[in-house]
Image 1 (tube, rainbow, N blue to C red):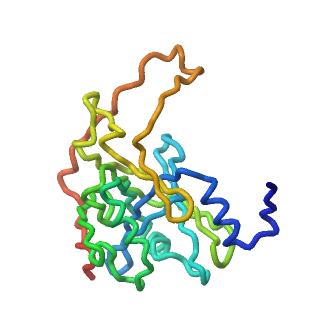
Image 2: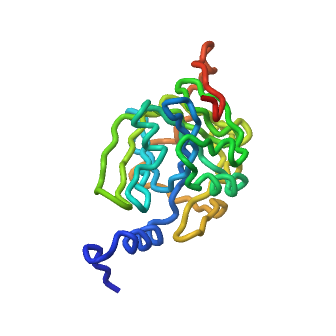
Length: 231
C-alpha cells in the first residue's frame, strides 16, 4: 500500500499517523490560567529532547474548529507547566480529562484528580503520578494553520517528583512498579508490562551505567500554589 499524504484530508493523515506511530508516551499536562484556574489535559505527541539542558516537548494540536487548546493558551500566558506521567491505575481519570470543558473550568475538580503543590512553578502536579516534571517554556513552534495544526512546546525541566514506591533496590525507577501506559491508534492504549533488553554495541567498553543522580530535598520556601479551581 502506498499512502500519499499530500492528497489526504488532515483527519485522514492523523488517523494513519496515530495508528502507525505507536506506542506513544502520555504527557498529562497541568497549567494555570491567568486568573489562577488549574487545567489538566493529556497529550500523546510527547517525548524527551535532550539532557543538556534537560528538555522535553509535547504537542497540543488545535481543535477541530481551529482553536488553540486551553493548555497552550495558559502556557503562552505564563510560561509554566507540569508534565505528570499517568500509570495504568490512573488511565480512566487521565482519559476523562481529555474532555473539552469551557475555558477556566478545572479538570482536577471536575474529575476528582488529586493535586499536589509544585516546588519551582505555580501549576500543581497530579499527586498520585509516579513521575512529574516541573517545566518552564523554552520555545513554542507553530506547525501549520487551522484545524489539526499544532504547536510544539519545548519545556526546560527544572525538577522532578518521583514516588518512592516506584523505585527499585538500585534507586532507579522500576518500570514494573511505574506501570506506565502508552497510546495506540484509535481508542486503544497499552501497558509496559512486556519488556526485553538489548546491549548497545557502541557501549560495550563504557562500563556499568551510572547510578541515579543526586536527590535534593524540596527547597525550604516553595512558591505559593493556588488550589485547583481557585480564582
